[in-house]
Image 1 (cartoon, rainbow, N blue to C red):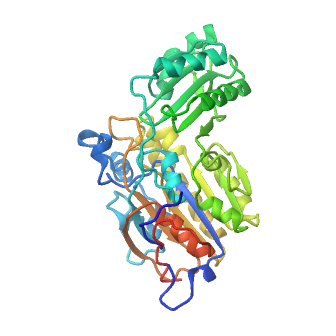
Image 2: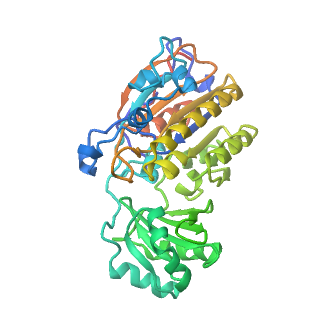
Image 3: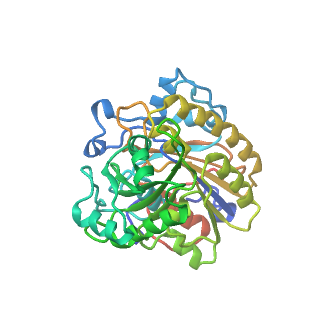
Amino acid sequence: MLQTGFSPITANRKGMAAEKTIKRVLLLVLDGVGVGAAPDAAEYGDTGENEPNTLANTLRAVGGIELPTFQRLGLGNLLPLEGVPPVEKPAALYGKLTPQSKGKDSVTGHWEMMGVITEQAFPTYPDGFPPEVIQPFEQAIGRRTLGNCAASGTEIIQRLGEEHQRTGKPIVYTSADSVFQIAAHEAVIPIEELYQMCETARRLLTEPHHVQRVIARPFEGDSPQTFRRTERRRDFPLPPPENLLDTLSAAGIKTYGIGVVPELFTYRGFTQAERTQSNPEHFLALQRALQSDCAFIFANFEDFDMLYGHRNDPAGFAQCLKTFDAKLAELLTWLLPTDLLMLTADHGNDPTTPSTDHSREYVPLLMTSPALKTGGSLGTRASLADIAATLTQIFGVSAKAGASIDLNVL
């Protein structure tokens, strides 16, 4: 259900209600781009050499990079960033959001943005899945499995990929997140069969083993040196509680989902959805979404996290930020005076720490519109659910979700 107790981002000081100024909202999630350890980071093991600050540490690791579009919006005003100094007159409202949900993964982050605070952590399996989980799964699919351990996705296919090719046994593994992942070579287990295996796992994984996501991880290649995960990943999450997307749908407000977002909400509440698989594909889908009649566009850009954060690759992460910055400059030219662009993240994934897992971090929030007269600081917000609260005000729907952010300069 939608949670209460946080605050919106609200009407302007001149008396013009935000919902009368803004007609369309674009919410873009830069997956894994955190901005510093959250107050409870120690509870997640993110301390000492693992203490994260994804954005600042990444830029520092590469000696600083220029991100002119982000700089103009005020990203450098939010926190010290090497190569991205603060500006006197930022073009966006800027601040950071404090995660409240139990968990540091994409599902809890995106659910919280839509007003759902996950108050109890989903089960994790640092030592692999117990017999009462793995045996019924193997019986149901008619195959034994390999792995059954916590591992990096790229490492485990390099280590077990050849044995998988010889035996036809799918590779089952997990991570620090609540996930049941199944990796299979596309030439050994056809993609539709892999998806069916995931659906089987999803059906079997009930309480107390109700993992948050089952994930299909197809790969290709001829040897450990050439194995690579393909773009046909698919997520099978638990259905979310009632959330803002349901409220918008019931009110006739059309929503366009891009990337993994629709899957994270089991496609509920979306008028249109595109399961694109990379940042370039997401930007193309975003162009199509802007030609639609949808008033809310919700997209996830996962390359930061998937390709670079999990692989401890700060140079690749930094280049991904530069590429996104250039596309963001183009996107800003597409906006109408009645559009609002919100840029945020779902969690951190610091590529400079020894860990390859997600990190418990504050996430950034940048909000801009052609109608914005001047930018400024939003400070530190209590929850990612403040995004939901702000959207309820803009779209004039009744839902309790966080606290709305004051759009006092529109």
